[in-house]
Image (cartoon, rainbow, N blue to C red):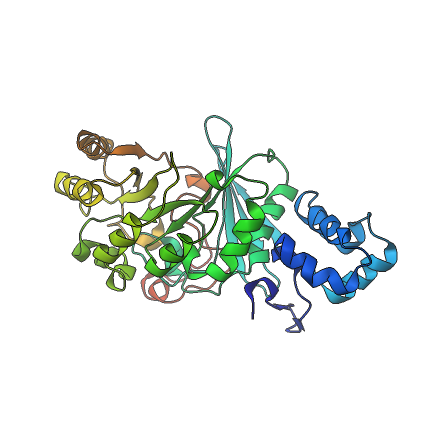
Length: 374
């Protein structure tokens, strides 16, 4: 079944088989509505009501007759995620817990920078199966793919909560691996890129090579960020099991073939972990690996979390600065990311969706009674 039409299951277990309009692109929505509307332009009215006005129910589409609204409500649904909880941090970042129709939960984050710009960090899966050693989401185990409507619905839910300007940046760096959910990511990107330039949308991947190759064929593409975190296969496989499936030689070949428009770069995210990947030899290896690429390295001192254990801690400031400066001496563009939302467990690698029971690594490594605590 197409990801934009995934049936919802309500909280008493009854499936709602009506197609969800929220994840349909403009063309697909027009095709779906064609048998039920009196004039073709009505489809555009419905689409604009959903995505420009943020309408959450058919009764609020006042440009349509009452009879037509009732007819559409019988055959289709508008399934916006429910905002369950907001967790603000002192720096202005706000983490949102969202509940989906089948009771699955995801988190999305509104990140406010020093210039007052908002970036929405979106989830693509309700969990993650990749089990990266530095990421809290993986400790809670795999979850299902989100539909296109559930992805777009995160933006609409955060907008409805208030406080967002018209222009925001969008990053797929929340829960899940976006390139393992291409069937939903592609229509969601098409919908979201109508209101946000593709240059303001970033998709982050742990290195799913077939997904990178598919993304390269899209007519319009978001920015691409790659979670790298090590420049040799032995270390990267230790902290990112996905490297055993697509090792660095395959990943880098796909990235070197990836088409970049003028003025664009690949972003490489590199989480710095004390005593593991933060030394001068690691910086030199990273520079060699990225030589010749139009690239930027985003250094991220790891954000500690109780589920990660006492070995997953950031280097001291001097070590971070030394790594950063060494990359710059090699000619790489490098930045150090300042943590945002740390006090609300909303920083990079900390999303978990409270209320879920831990599975996999979490079930083995967490102390009794920890599940769901901040």
